[in-house]
Length: 80
Image (cartoon, rainbow, N blue to C red; front, side):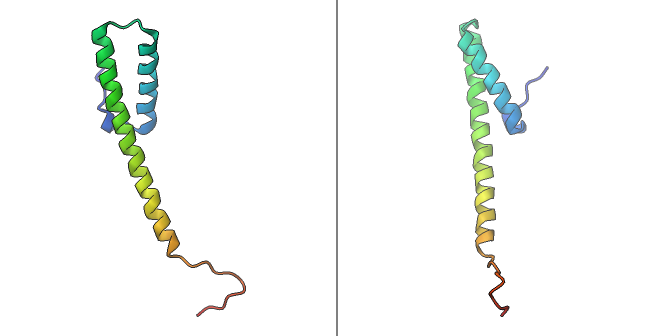
């Protein structure tokens, strides 16, 4: 099975794979070469996940900025 590029994975899938890699590395049963490949893959997954989180944070900021432009109407105010 071909491994997906981290940038093409959804956040949850990338996180699940990263957790799996961490568990394998912590067990210490991998060869040095396998450990390095797993570490490299983990770094790719972390970077892709961080990018997704940054994008989500920017979307939230845009939505909050749009929300600040709305004026709350209370029953005591008259329409102008």
